Image (tube, rainbow, N blue to C red; front, side, top):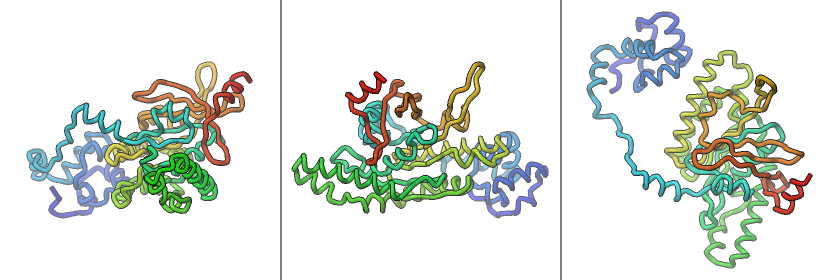
Amino acid sequence: TPLPMAHELSAVPLPPGLRAALIKAGFRSTSDFDGVSVIELAREAGISHNDALAVLKAVRGPQDRNQRSLDTSSVTKPPQKSALDLLDEVKSMPHIITFCSDLDNMLGGGIAMGEVTEFCGVPGIGKTQLGIQLAVDVHLPMIFGGAQGEAVYVDTEGSFMAERANDIASAFVNHVQKMVKIRNDAVYTNAASFLTTEHILDTTYVYRVHDYCEQIAVINRLSSFLDSHPRVKIVIIDSIAFLFRHGFEDYAMRSRILNSLAQKLTQLANEKGIAVVLINQVTTKVGANNGHLAPALGESWAHACTNRIMLFWEAGHRYARLVKSPSKKTDTVPYQVVAEGIRGISKKRQRNVGQE
């Protein structure tokens, strides 16, 4: 129910400290509270639920409050689906391959659609290379088992290199053309006819953000962007943590903002049926006896992703370890970064690596 008239927040009888918190969070007029729930207001403004309830009562008044509490005709009922429907949806969704067969197998066929997947690792381990590889691989035609989609790449560190994307896309196109020749079938030839390096680069939409405010703004606009670009099947954020690790003095506010972003990204993956891939850094976590590397942003961030993969070095070789998944077992596989992008390691070389 829309508010009948908007007033400045200064006209609403509120404690000065509470009003200041609301203004800082962007609530400057009574119209800004239209459609906002108690939970949403508490999270956005960083105030208690009791304070949020008091604010909404003061802003909306008793008549509006009574009407809202009784009128449920406009409330959207959540869609009802059977477990079999959900299983069919999961099975029908394509995965986005990484071009490392061991990594794809560990993940059940590649990066899952409708889920949030996080890759964590130290600098130089190949996180951005993997992100670019996925932005390219999402273009694989459906007849080859791909998603035949487009990509959004949110670059927070300035690490996305168009030249590198061009190299990986060129190798990808060459690989698909080899597959077409092997099959020698007009159906496959026609399906891959549109696939060029230029097409891949032209349908990979890159956002370069420079501070956490820009990052929040881009994530908030993603839903409308996807509505106008329905072929986008993957959103990659590289990295999710970088702009929140420096110059942030209010860690409570940082936690609230990150929780809000996590909810938006999860909702985006679920409602749009796309893959959301988060690149994350690592930090040293000091224990009782020693220290170890852990994903940045702390334990509270762990709930933000459906799947989490740790990328690490061991004996000079790169490995990926699945440490969180609702349906897959914990496992570790090797991978490599080559001129063509992310690739697997042959079984023979894996045996040699194990003997080193």
